[in-house]
Image (tube, rainbow, N blue to C red; front, side):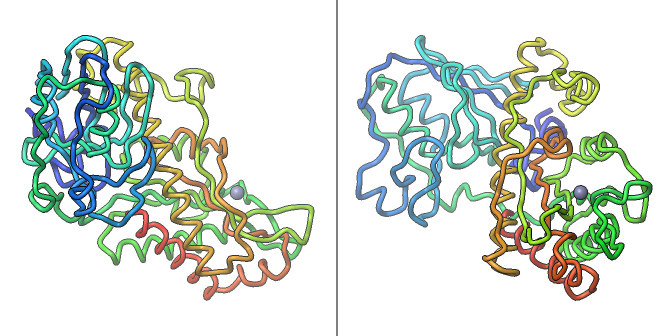
Length: 387
Ligand SMILES: [Zn+2]
C-alpha cells in the first residue's frame, strides 16, 4: 500500500521520482511550551556539519555544510509524544497536548499551530523512515519542553542521503500559437514563432540530459491557457516553464524577467478558471477519498504553497542563468505575477519573458538560430541549477 501510495503521490524519496511532489504526511507534535529545554546539538557538532547552521524558519542554510536530518522517531521519543500513522494517507500525528505541527515528506512547508511555516529543506521518507530537517528541532526547542533531557542521536549524514535524482519531468510551454501570434515586431516577427524556436531547442537539450520533456505545443497550434494548465495537471511534472517574448510601446525597453506566482489561492474563487475540488481530487487519487473536505482543502493549500515557493526558487535559478549567459545589464529581475499558467499549474511554475520584440537590437537577435540556441542553453542551465 505504501508503495502504490507513494507512486501516486510522486514521492521523490520513497520512489526515486524526481521532485517533491504530493506525498503528504502530517505530523502533529504536541507538548508543553517550555522554551529552550532541548538542545539538539552542541556548537561543535554544528560546526562539524551535523546540524543545520543557525537561522530562522524559512531561511536557507548560511554555510555550505551538508544539511542534516533527524529521525522523526527520535523527536517523538525525546518529547514522549503519541504517534499515529494513517496507513492510507501516511498521515503521522504526534500529540501531547498544547501544540500541533504538520509536516509533509517531499515538502518544506509545515503547519505549526495553524500557522504555515517553511523549513529550509523538505521532510524526507527514506527506507521507511521519516526524517525531518534539523531546523525543526531548533523551532521545537523554543516551543516545547522535553520529557527527558537526552539529546537525540543523529543519523550519519550519508546513511540517509537520497539517491541521486536521475530524471525529471518537465513541461515547457511555448507562449501563444496558431491564431494567437502574441507580440509582433514592427518588422513582422511574431512572438509565437520565437517562443516555439526556443522551446524546441530547450526540449531537445533537456531530453539529451535524460529528462522527460512534454511540450504544450510543438507546432504553430492554438491552445487556451486552461488547456495548457490541464496538460500540466495530467502530466504531473516536476516543473512547468512558460516562455514568452515581451513588447512595449517604449522602444528602449529591453531585458529579460522571470515571474512566479505569489497569489493567494482560493479554490473556486476564479469561477470557471480555477481548479475544482474534483480536479485536485484526481491528482491526489484514492488517498484523499477518506478525507473530509476540510482536510483536503488543507492539503491542497499546502500543496500550492509548496509549488509557489518552489516556483520562486526556480524563477531565481533561471533568472540568474539568463543574467550570466546574456547580460546582467539586461536583468529586469524576478517578479511575482498573476499569469494564469503560473498561478494554476500544479507544479513549480514560472513564466519567462526573454526580451522585447519592440527593442530593435533584440528583435534582430531573436530572428537568428544562434540567439535562440543561446537562450535555450541559458534556460537549460537555469533549470538544471534548480534541480
Ligand atoms: Zn506572451
